[in-house]
Amino acid sequence: MVRVALVGYGAIGGGILAYCLERNDEVKVVVDSDAHKAGRTVREISRLNTDVRVLPDVRQADLSQVDVAIFATKSRLSQVSSDMEYVLMRGVPVVSTCEELACPGPSDAELARRLDSAARDRGVSIVGVGVNPGFVMDWVPALAASASKSPTDIHVTRSVNVSRRRKQLQNKMGLGLSRAKFDKGVAEGSLGHVGLAESLRLIAWSLGHEATEVRTGVSPILGSGDYVMGASQFAEGRAGKCAIRLDLEMSMTSTDYDLIEVRGDPPLKLRFENGVFGDSATVALTVSAAERIRQARPGLITVLELPLSHSRPFSH
Image 1 (cartoon, rainbow, N blue to C red):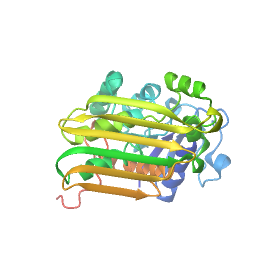
Image 2: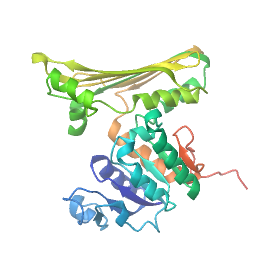
Image 3: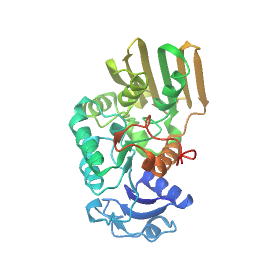
């Protein structure tokens, strides 16, 4: 059992809270800036079996009796790093669904350095987790590639039918927009999935290299009348002699599946029929990480460094 502070009580945060209670983890603090939630109890909002009152700001929370803080809010590191640093400086480890935290890129290098320094100073860990980045397009391919000698090519395809997903994801993929509005949203950074570049860097690191020659792209999947039915994205680059390609398609007509292919000795192919359902998998991965993070080394880490076990059963 761990004592949790949950920051973000939206769709994913609500699932995380419910799963924490199911696993008998104790949710001590809940934070959400939404004026319709702040000041009310969890029971009043969702009828879950806890009377914890929602706070509007993590700086108002008593973190002295908390083992781990879970952030389930924004995708961009710049939007959450200040609150994360505040929590770390109080000696509380952080697990977050923030996609850019999974493997911060060059543009977030200073924020990553600050978080790493704060975590190391207090002897705690911080990690970004999720289904992608954090599992299906990086952790699993990295594991598969470790069983193949001198891999020369890694290709991951994730295909998602968004008609079965929550409205927020559909909006993120630009459903119903015109081509012009879609292109404008992509240029502004408000549309498309965040995380492919992070996944590519994670795979490269697992192979012992920095990712090089990195390219990314986003394009609409159009239906009748030039209206958007979803989006197709890619990230590609190299890790030494190995080429890496990640393809993500999320649309109203896509077939749900995930496919991982490694060209090496031996060649390997893994396929998840019906795909890895993002919401429930993210909830499970996040809570599992929160229960294990105290076994990790201090500092900013990746899922590649997060222990799989909750303890060290053979240590004396």
